[in-house]
Length: 243
Image (cartoon, rainbow, N blue to C red; front, side, top):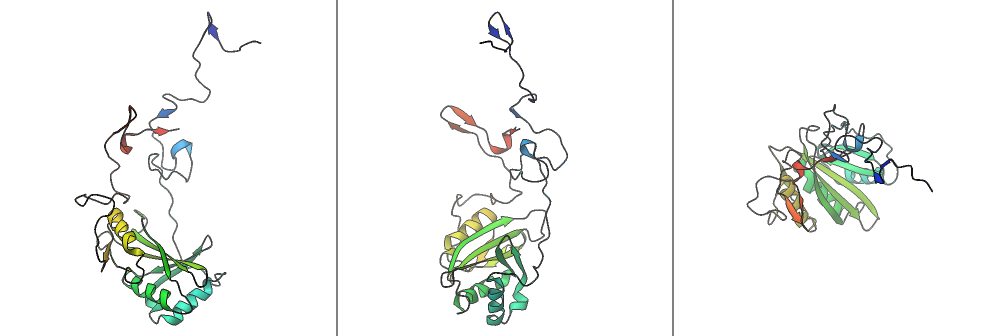
């Protein structure tokens, strides 16, 4: 059996693998126009931020009726039960099989009360309150998302309310959905959204004296190196992009 590897006196000669670049497999991201992410990705996909990819943002608009599924029934029931529907609901969006009601921030607790108590709706469970930062895509960049579930009718609906960094205030829904207690605290801790009326709005993950809100998109990635089993893991802003 023959070996095709080049040798010198029985010692293999190092050969650069095909397609490898200087410093591969780890090197700093090359200077490239926005649109190239990690692993040579083009267009979309790099959500890490290390590749410098700028993703395209699409405007979220009202969905035309009929929506399909039980979505029309939920919308009509809420409109009938809630007289301020036209003032409170900014838009209704159906996307990827999910119904989202965009709510004016000052009305979110009122809408949740109706969603829970009306016999035609009966969304008794708030399973999640989470935040997202649409930096550069929305003037009211801090969005809070509420996932409601109807145990009676086996239905789900998503509520979304947007606030600005300058006025990051929302009414708390803990009096309506007790499950939102610690979830609102986490959104406050990570995104800086202030839930007015919350019984104990304090940090839940970071130390009480921590400055800033780590999950905002403009929060610095810096940190401290961590040692683990003899290896040192650099902070995020000092790591290299693998390609």
